[in-house]
Length: 458
Ligand code: UDX
Ligand code: UDX
Image (cartoon, rainbow, N blue to C red; front, side, top):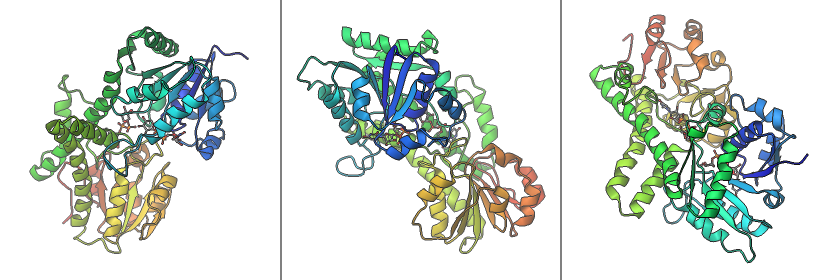
């Protein structure tokens, strides 16, 4: 079969995999190939057991794979064949040299740009899908302009705004698709080609264009605003716990103001995920680079409050349990950074688990999807940790439960049965405020929600 377009994506991760699956699903007339340097990951994408869990992803991949969606390690061949290349490799925080701990490590995208340059035999459109620091496209253009023949590359910025756990819905019905480009005739033509791809399923008024630097910056700003909102509500949980106000009541009251809106006001043990911390620190680094120290300090505080929130949660457990956790068994309900994903990158559960182990507690970890990643995250840690998928079995014989992830299944457990099987006095620390606290208290638990007065029997 001949296809109207050949699309390539370099990087088969949480962003590249689902995004390309959606393009293939919506555009049967395009051939979509996803390549990666990691052969294990590609083998998993080609198996029945996909490397990431995302509701709805399995069906889409199964219906397109082998027809117009292909996963491969043949990067060079993929580059030669493609007219449009999405770059979706990771841009982790730099761990060495200048900007260590804050700046983005750009070695992977630069290697990718050089590989595109080396292997290309025809002109191509290059789409920045990964979140990059502002003005990365400029550097990419510079590298790609080092051609010795007539080949020409147009670089576009098209950041991905999907959230994990709802990736398929976010891709199918995006709030907006943002495409940044230069205003040269060739870039405008390239931009139109990308608009044409999305127009296969996204309404025209949701596809917006901007200059390329605004597009790169918008992605960092969106994540900074989202994280700021959670840090803001979380900062008031500390206040509520001191003043006997109830954070849920406060969130409801402010969320009904249409200027504020009611989304992203769920207080928690802290936000996690691969993007927020990395992107904000990257923004902070860029601000300092431009001499904007006040702006940098403002956004850095969003991260500091999150660290404080995680620290505070661990201290609440310690002080509630009579200031000693040594030898006590604590069950973590959930390890993923949010519900409906197996991803544990920057999950607050990692921090809490390490803190509890430092206090010599014994841990039992339960999660419907994230146990494999939890084992990797806690590998080599000196302490007693077990991993049990069934929450009843996991909490059996424990002194306390700490809810780390807002999985739906935890809301409907038989807590009478769980209480009977636990050591008394039994504690619940609800790091997501998802349980019925009054009912748990009536059963006999000592309950410590976030941002509300605790309910204790002593
Ligand atoms: C990553 C970044 O974290 C995010 O900022 C960006 O917006 C998109 O890329 P994610 O898809 O979640 O997000 O990352 P990850 O799951 O780590 O996937 C990246 C993939 O790129 C990995 O499979 C890795 O093997 C691959 N890769 C990396 C390459 O194929 N080539 C490289 O040179 C480097
Ligand atoms: C985020 C952005 O939402 C997305 O647009 C971007 O493309 C990538 O980064 P993601 O990290 O996948 O997506 O998930 P998100 O739903 O934003 O949650 C991030 C963290 O905040 C999670 O730990 C979540 O549990 C927490 N959170 C979210 C809260 O604590 N309270 C809330 O009200 C919402």
